Image 1 (cartoon, rainbow, N blue to C red):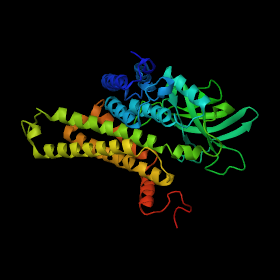
Image 2 (cartoon, one colour):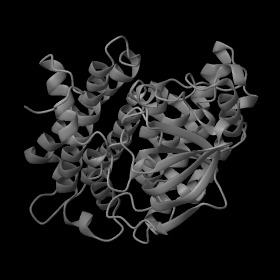
Image 3 (cartoon, rainbow, N blue to C red):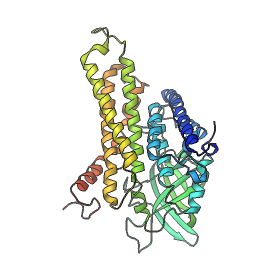
Image 4 (cartoon, rainbow, N blue to C red):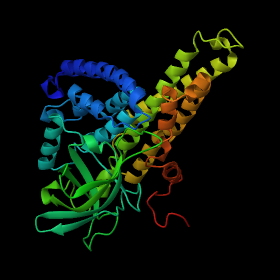
Length: 402
């Protein structure tokens, strides 16, 4: 297949390339669903799927136009993720991490790091970012991983969890806390873009999970990992501000994955109901309970789709009030990941007992969708940010509770 870099960047060429990307994503989703039937229960890593995404050019959609790329919008990223999630939640979530990193960072990087990152992505790189640290969890602003300065760079030490897609990674974005005395948390946060190193980083626990079991979200130990000074992504002290200003990419892309799972669950429920009979009725579709359940799912999906489209289109730029903007981005993430659970549960009931069998697609989706509300920002943090912002209280004001 042609790569993004080979396509014209005129409006007509871009439209044609987008149509090709959507069609390719649908074909790949069907392929990924077949593979999930075979590898889900064993937790088989979706390495072949990542390879196919790279070959198709989908992993390169966020390369900027001035570097020969497609420069997909945030909303376009969410549409691709929804399609891929319909075939395999593990693949979509792994792709989402890459999409968040490559999409959110293209406008903020220094020229040297920008050209290095997107040149690599254009040529087939796959970027992973393990941000969950031992002891601090999803609180990425206060990492337990440390970065000690050396004459030519930094030395990183720490334990990171949920390194999603690590086995397929060619490059990493690593966060750590600088040991500078004049930088207090969270302003000591630093981020580094590096090629996947051969030394100084080891898998200490391989991923085995109830949900999204094929993501390869291993735990990594960073032990004296040296990174160059030029690998630093943002100026000292400004990393948390840059990250907060791009929080929408994580929230909307993650929401898209779980919306895509819910959409596939709905499709399965409709497919399995039409023309199906039981000992009680000749056509389940004629039962009012089935009709009401399908109507509720369809209405929920329409609401989630409209919400995500609205936010991914109109709530993209931070503006002057950064904490309020972050709180705003929590709305679709909170609503969609929780509502998607309800849709999938309803679809499971409509499909019935056959969904309990090992290897059932609805069973896989039911497990995968459970991860949505647990991802940062978790439900409690999202509610806090949304509620405080609505009441005129800064979500980052300390003390947080009085």
